[in-house]
Image (cartoon, rainbow, N blue to C red; front, side):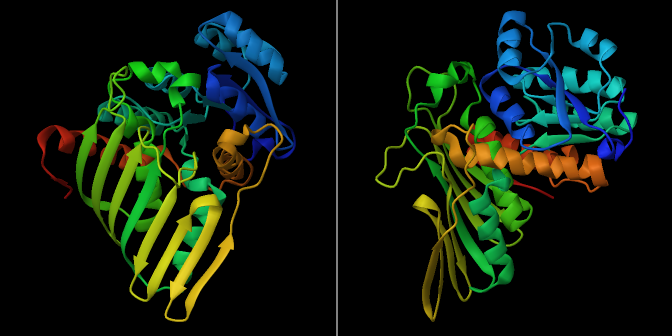
Length: 348
């Protein structure tokens, strides 16, 4: 059973990990950056794989039956890092046991399932948080702080560019089999960043392409968003080879009424006004366990986890609740609808 907020103040917070895939190891290493947080069990449907990952992380118990894990463990929360189609049943199982949930993005393969996850946790009185770490990248937080300072004025147009030829299928081959690929896998991140920076969307128009011939889903998306604070173009691709390619960096260029703010390659933040351009590097922190190829992403996992810990220890709600992430998922599915219909989707 879960315990009340703040229960970890005098003893370690105990949690279980669900999943032993590519991201699970890094997720747990990020938790281990904090004192007073203890992974006590790991679930994976293939027990041998779960045992291998658990041994490398010092997790004492492994299960291949999710219900058995809940029956035997006393948990303060669970961290679900499994395939998207398993999120809803695992979240419901945690809600039944009154255990707080952190769940990986994207929330669910359909909007109805995502809504059902939120509803199940609300009805059970259980917090549901989504591990949406992209907005927690240190360079993106610094850009947001610069926009909030309004040095360049109020934004009116922006471009968010996440395009590379990185062989993402090498370490995550299952991505080749996903029929809804880049908008679900990366779009959920990039849409969330757009919301973080510019508020909610009023309309979305999307075009998609499949360039890699050996995959089932789309690997290129171009999206135009009319948002509360700016018109925003999203460029998302795993089929682009460019001179400025810096996987997994996200480039952002914001035009404002008194200048511009840019997050450029190699973490250069540039602010341009009538007085000229002021530039400084805003690199992410470096962790010994992080893969250098994923540095800024792995560092952001630590920051996202810290936001969840503030809830468990102090009762401060994190930014990426289930209810909030529903708004991101609405954009993802509206983008698919737009791409299929060739029409802009407008929100009431």
